[in-house]
Image (cartoon, rainbow, N blue to C red; front, side, top):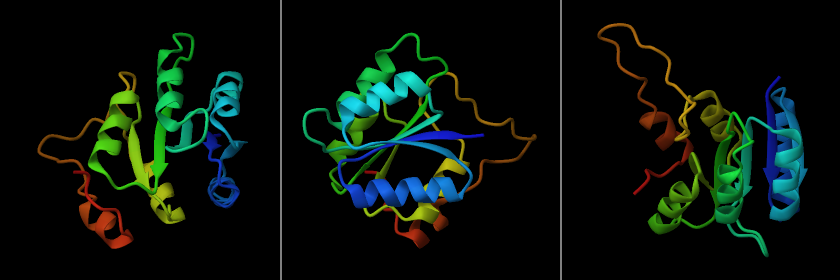
Length: 153
C-alpha cells in the first residue's frame, strides 16, 4: 500500500489532501507544521511527502533539505511542494532544495492523483519505465492545461 505524509499549517488544505489520498487507498500521516512533519517522515518513511512551501518556523525548503540530507532515509521519498506562490524563483528554489514536483494551490484532487500516477522525481533511485523502440513518453501538457496547471517557467 502507498503511504504519504501531508504537511500543511492550513487545516482545510491538510484535511482535503489527506481525505483525497485516503479515498484513493493511501495510508496517510498528517502534520500541521514542518517540525512534526520531519519527525513523522523519519518515523514512518512514507513514499511521498506533500508539504506546503510557506509555514512558520520550518518551511518547505527546510523540509526538503532535512529529508534529502538524511542518509538513512533510503529509498528517498518523492517530495511534492504546494504553494499559492506562482513565482518562478520559488519553483526553482524548491527543486534546488530537493523537491521533485511543485503544485499551485488550490490543489485539485484530480490533479494531485494524476501527478502521483506519473513517474517523476529528481532522486537518483527513480527510474522511468522502459519504452519500446520508437515509443515516446506520454504528453501530459493537454491534461495539465485542462485542469489548470500552468507551465513551469
